Image (cartoon, rainbow, N blue to C red; front, side, top):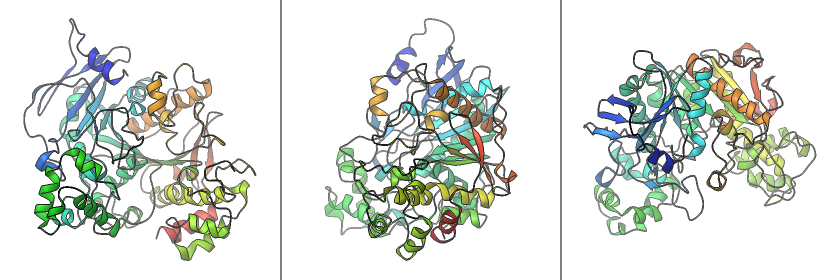
Length: 556
């Protein structure tokens, strides 16, 4: 796919021929044709009214009006991220409050008369940053993989409000019913898909929701939304590195209330602090966006609101049957804990301190016995006795702390979910076990969070300076990449596309492809292990004793 500005310019270079067009409930969309990929693109389509002015900090509202003819030729701005003076996923892209849009990639030959399944991509970024225009989420190649499989799909990617504009807590918003706004944005986008995707050749009854990190957390939130009420918005789900334990916070919990209070008290709305909640919110809605953002640092995120989030926690909802019975792909990456752990521990006492917030204090001694101070057993895994002593900060027990952190945050949740629901729905689990060729983390390379995304999307973007500067650890899989990495991208994108289209990741046109069995086909469960040296399957029983303790005692 072409870069943002180039794509917008390209759209107006038609001197003849027919522009791709689709008529939906709100009007006619004029898109961009990509003949080299046999695809049509429809970009920046509004699915909600702009959440600005009096609509700021309110649940999203449908457009409910005609826009006539709409030039769907360029991605819209990212939704504003959390305030930061540094670099985040929004860096290098336009940002705006008027951002509630989505994009559609439609293969040639797909139409209302010959419809195909749909995937909706929900980007990650901690619910505080990111956007669908990000080059790392370029959907052309996974759609191309679906076409090579002879099971084409339509891809939708969405923007949603972030940070304090999308996930602010506090009593005033609780009382008004204006919580979890970014999740409600996503939900409205899914309703838009149901109403309109048939016009693009999508099958509304065959929709997969897919996300990574907080995008995966969002996927799970939709599966358990309204205590598992099935609104028939999707029938399958893909959750990459985002199946954690624990319960949702209350919106009035101190960290959330403090964020609201600081936003109010540090702006020109401070004078309303002793006035009514309605007066406070009216003032916050009228603030200039720069004043709002520059004073909105603090805790934000999903909270229990008794409505869209009406269960104590994600895993508790699955445990009690309050979830939509969707087919799943779920997995994590081998060494994610090393990127999330608090580093610097040299003693067991310091390891306990580093695990505060990860393991309850009363359980730390038991967990540490199950994860001994043996570097060869720690994370990054499979690195022997090597101690990444030059990490910042250095710590002789860094690998021990990282192993525990990664299992709590990522690996154990995915295993618990597989063990709990894989007998009820088709369920495929994976472990990504490959260090990408163009990624380096300094002293030691490890299989970190997010790294699988490049391979799932089989990213072929030009390896430009912008790409290198603005995309963290994303890996370019274009012509200069090693053949092993290129094949891994082809294989993974084909498997994901096959699952989206058919409910089975094995319907691919790749000779010698390793069969990915359902998790329930093995007594101990089975993972597909994705690695460039050859994909394999494994029993899902590594670190069994430690993860079982986490599942039984930390999650519940």
